[in-house]
Length: 334
Image (cartoon, rainbow, N blue to C red):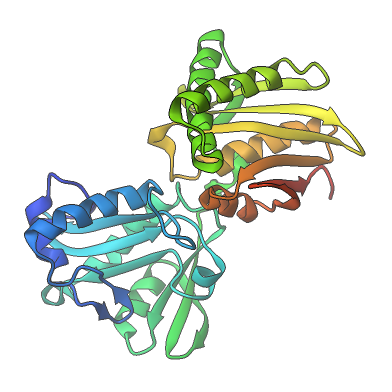
């Protein structure tokens, strides 16, 4: 039976033996750790796990989950899922890359592994289609993509570009995540989490000490909450009775009526799975129903991962002050 598992320390030995055997570049599949020692692989595995959470990413990189492909008790390959696209990924390698050990090729394992990767990616990737790429000379890989519903959209520089449509159920209206008013207990939990998170952002961007940044964060958030010139909305993202995250936005007016997202928080178990964008879209819908013409939010210069998410949802820069940028998106218009 073919199945995929995320990189983890329980499978350390088999993962190490496979990773060290994957060529540095075979048919466009890149491996940074060819020939790596067992001792060095410990650090490499930490990097794989952190990259899936968006931790320690280099500028221009996106969160990437590494999977290992199994056939019963045998590890037969590796795959990578990039959570969303940048311009370079859109024109290049796309969302998914995979590699099957030579001795297991030609048996249908790649087709089944890609099917499972696509199923996993449905809950992660915000784009409407999956982007994939293969070397033109790698006819077997192209066939695997086509068997999984792919269509060739172009060729360039010896590469074949393939798109695979998401299942119809992906649309936001059919998803079971909803926004509801926070309970008192949830609001207390949310406030504690965002105060700590905001303090970390202040320490990183304004050189505050940890102790001072916590006090500063609490003060700023208290001041925003006390503002009576806007209508504050505290919402819980509920998915099947579980809390996926929270969003705090306020409704206000200047030249137009707008909704300003003060804070979006996604619970750890739901990060990297599209819930951040999902929650924002639900808030946008509520804002439009309240007569808003714009949605706005603020992002730190250092938080390029969040900025990429917002850009992917249609937000554009409105104004920049210091290391913070206000982004906006028009809503409520046909």
